[in-house]
Image 1 (cartoon, rainbow, N blue to C red):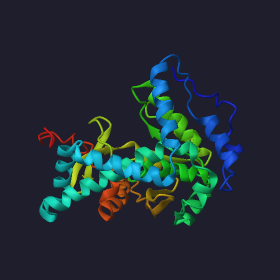
Image 2 (cartoon, rainbow, N blue to C red):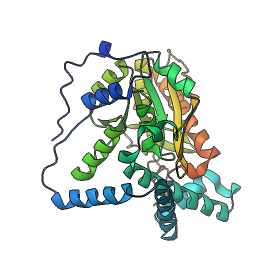
Image 3 (cartoon, helix red, strand yellow):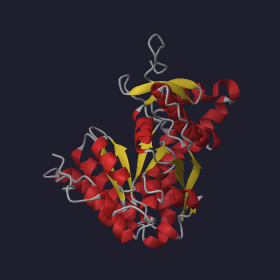
Length: 339
């Protein structure tokens, strides 16, 4: 069962600006507000995960980087979910790119995915020097100015680059941050993910029944990551254009943004060289008010959030996770492109 820490004594006025906080204060905040779960039994699975972590963490950064690239090339050679990726690439590029160019994007995105896996497993060996000197933040002034408004942040994100450690760079920089995500079906894997996130000052918020926790975090000045590139069930999403084709996209993101009255920005991280990561804050996302038509207001600003992520994908397509069925849910009468 989910057993989050008792937050009844945590007051928003105890937190907030000025940012950045110390790493220690950020970690204490993350631990106090994070969800925790006691995993009993499952000894074999836990031993497997522990052994994998131990092996990957023993590598030098150069060896880890080459391992990550090797995993990506293997996934490419095995054509993992290639048919899904091909449908997606055809949706986005049509005849604007050749089949060879599309295949190259698929190849490069597999390399990125390999880097995502390995970088995630190496979080415990990323010391402060690695987080600061080897992981610069481009456009950090946006991060600092928006956090210091004290209203919290809506961080519009997608499955871009090394997406988990992107949030870790923010958290290890002294800016509280949490991710809204579904619980993993495997309880051992789920707790491993939660623990690895907390190790880099990133909280985990359960997707289901998350509004109270999101509101409290925003009142404390926290940044809340809300992905916009996930296929949503029909009753949870709105149909707006995503990379040129209508897709069911999260409705709640713009709703939270409007309710909080907070700033929003977009960003991503990439693992460029063996000991060189980069976090890029790409842009502030402008809120466009339409008080006379609240539903139109949500649709328009959902589009603004999506467009910020689209610009990253189109600018550097190898960063995006082309493997998921982004356009699976379609309006009535429109066929599923993956059928």
